Image (cartoon, rainbow, N blue to C red; front, side, top):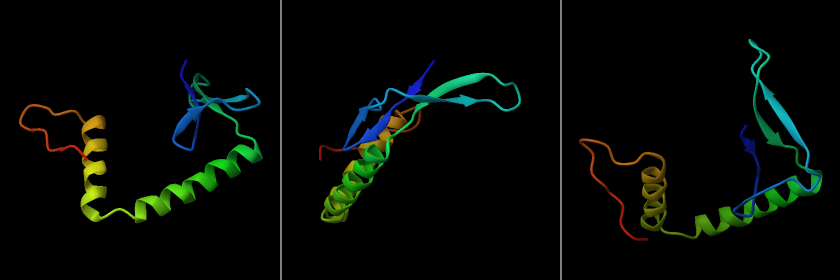
Length: 90
């Protein structure tokens, strides 16, 4: 069963408490996964670091940002028949 961790400061981490909630399909009652239950401090840290990351992102030029978008696109949608690779090294 998949456990969804917390994403804090660019890293996937387990919750400090070790507690997870269950994702339940309401029509079947089947548990399909677990998600980390964050403490207030973990949530605050995630929010604070996201603001820092946003400031860094805003400091990039549109060309620099587009390189990251293409890398993300290719990582999540590998080239298929009829589509060629479009990324370059950032």
